[in-house]
Length: 427
Ligand code: SF4
Ligand code: SF4
Image (cartoon, protein in one colour):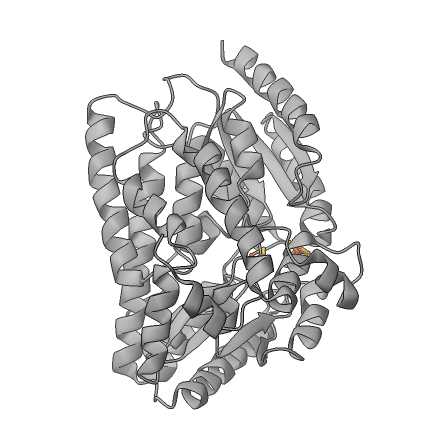
């Protein structure tokens, strides 16, 4: 990696905390990612992006800012990135997938709170994330209570625009959400100083749809047996989707898919044919949270799909491109985003139906429900998931964990037993 120390210092990072993070990330990536057998060559680009996670991309964002451009951060796939792009800004998904700055975070948050919330607060208060320090503002949402209240605190340290996300999908909820999307567009115009027009919004929608189509193409290839790519590699691509340059990322995913298509033709895979196939569902796995996927794929199974926000929920549906006016396109955006099957909705039948559909389409042998500790929406909703899957005789394993490695041995024992059980059923 080039010497980015000066850039990090100029961003006001706490260099001691930051060094600690940078000492952990590369060896973890090496052990979890680079040691996998049969990796596609096209992963080289994504390995490079992770290697440069605090380097080249930050440099690009700084260049953008030098010319007056704005960078807007977010934590949830409900925030419509198309609006930021239309106004000439850059939208960045802030990661929150690692335990860092915990002592600082616990000064303002309770100890027993979801690790994702603790992580973003720790990143900001510990001054370890160059993305956070590059953002002109961040967008929060009222999806869950923990986040909603944490954003009030975060606003003491960086300007936060809050979007009220509905918890139901009645007509009045749709109206509320459309109003929120419009307010967000107004705020982005004010922040960037640029007007959102039907033309630039249509272009941004097309661009982000292109990214989604590339990810859909990748997902579809994973329906094959043997799976041409590991779940871990797919997950890191889905995580990078949140912050990489859209056009470059889309092109690289499509290049990778070209290679994977050839592998599928040749009957080659990342794992042997008939390896037990698993779908992972639950809370988002923000970069660099690869703990459970690593355990699963080193326990004899392959992950073939992620029913996660760092997965299908992010890209499975597109925004309709047919609106003629800015308002018409904002309606299309609001409609698409409200369709995300997040556990904060009640009821959330769409997620149950989706899981049944995925098990069939991806020929999965089982589902692993993985929720972050203290996440009420997902830990409670796991009951509905379990009931649905049981009714259809689909094996399911329920896990609850944080970002620390303390329970890794215990999780591995449980995952191995589950994989053994679904392998038996497959024989
Ligand atoms: S799980 Fe819900 S709140 Fe979390 S990122 Fe996804 S949509 Fe947003
Ligand atoms: S993982 Fe659960 S508790 Fe944590 S921010 Fe997401 S919805 Fe909220």
